[in-house]
Length: 493
Image (cartoon, rainbow, N blue to C red):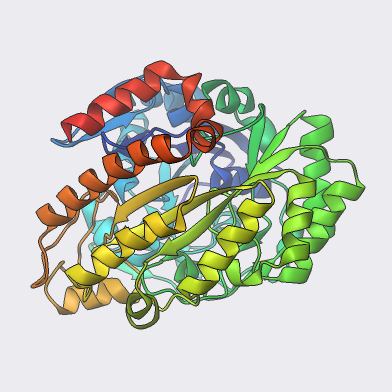
């Protein structure tokens, strides 16, 4: 295909599809912000966070789901106003792909010559299906996208075809062409800090619905200190997406970004979005020690999980002193056999219990993730998970129902067993309803189990630990309208 030279680029974070029983989220789209920083010196650049700007606008998305964000007509108007040569769209989750398709169509309505590109886990692992799904989508950037996007811009100016751009997927007639993968950026310290100045930073804290829903201080901001994970959990697509490698930024680079956020932007709470902040014990301690030494006086938490095996007394003391108020324990299962043989999670239940006690002893809150409904899991094992969730007694807890994610070993197992099709897009996938039945249980049984557990746990928490409940959920009290709306949805579901 012939490409016109790309000199004007518009990066769009699309509206978000969500399950009625979940909380909406509003935070900086870090992936898009990194892309913006990487190409901003090469092009005239415009970014649009349609989810944040259209936060209050909701509309139905199919029979069971809702969507919030700017209406497509307004997104189309913004595209027409900027007149880009290329529109790039973030597709972090499978449920976002339908919105990406609509944004791509809006761009083509403005001008059929506008090029469109998307990236993220869903399209990385289902490139052929996604290209067939939308004739308005010109390119997919597989895996890490910064260098691929920049190379595409250069190729368009140099007269090179898309076949010269590693990591790119494109259409040649009716054929989907998947180029060889692009090597990962070896030194992620070389990647510029996210271009936060191009985004509505004040909106994220004003809305007050970050990932994980809670905060202690505002304004807050998310950041990452690493890419990937050192482990190989069979249900998680992130490891494969990041090339089965764990790459770390240096403590000096992380602390430099923190100082900028704290002193220049006035940020007073950090939210670490790493897949695994504590994998390297020495590096994590150096970061927390550096926060203390440099006088970066913030609160912080980890909406994603941490590696509990890496925790020790010194680590937790540094965490507390540097402002930690909540740590997330990605427990997943309360059954040892499921941990070892089904999801290959490198933790034991005794390690999780020990970590929770050490964390609580320092007055740091705990937020635990659990998942039920893995293929091969029995009803007895599911009930052990529910029992363990109560025994662990975290301050906050989320119970999810497993959904197969493309790009994971468990997805392939589900395909082999006939639970999902090989081209399963999972566009309607959420983590509150199952997608398949097994000889051991049905999706309806999982839904009832999860619903009953939700009310039992949270009402029990109020009775057992009223102070801990208020400490954990206090930030929701200042958003009564949003919280009540979610409660209404939960009762209906």
